[in-house]
Image (cartoon, rainbow, N blue to C red; front, side, top):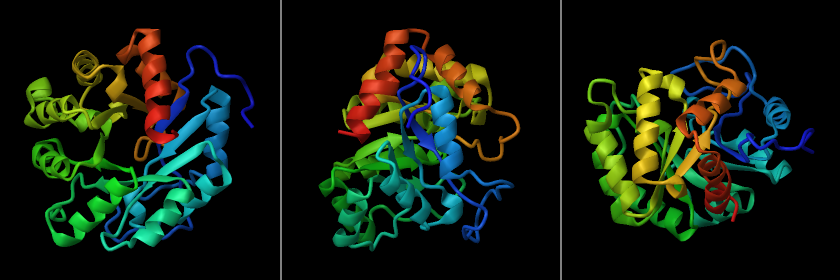
Length: 272
């Protein structure tokens, strides 16, 4: 139950958050070790306080393919959806059951992964075909300089693609970064969406605002999503949920565009 009605400024859908508890098994290569739980109960309380009605969870790479907690949360709360970290040999029967439980896609969290898996391999081609057949999406977080090749390989399979955190452009090249230009081209082809999320992870607020303006101009609100990135891993003491909503308002000054991005577009992609 939502404890307060959504205000005119409250996003309807938060498309990027993580849940975990400290007793969950961390991946041996985890890049971050949380100091506190980010539980389902805590997150739902945050959503309720801010009038956000729906949310999409992003599989956290620090737990590898331990997707259990996210899936249980979606089973219990129809207002939630999630992506998973998927072993490429997951069979269709398992994936179909996951879809029934609220899974909407797979996440490739490959940023800072030195030896990226081969998307052209047989096993990944099988997985991507199954993702397409399920009408899921591939949720991508990769280093900007690798995005052109990652997106090229994904586009060949016909899957829907959602790109995290503006595509993580670098300060030196900004809008001209090859990765960011590849993002714009991919969106233009009609099967890719981009998250306006985690601006605090970019080198500067100015870069986030500049990228948001260019994405609005080139992609429009029909291809953009908003996410908080709660609980702000590695930034837990520097960012609040209210900060992320305020950042969204700065990036997208037009209220009608914000409502479309964090409402109609997100609902159509994740909840239809």
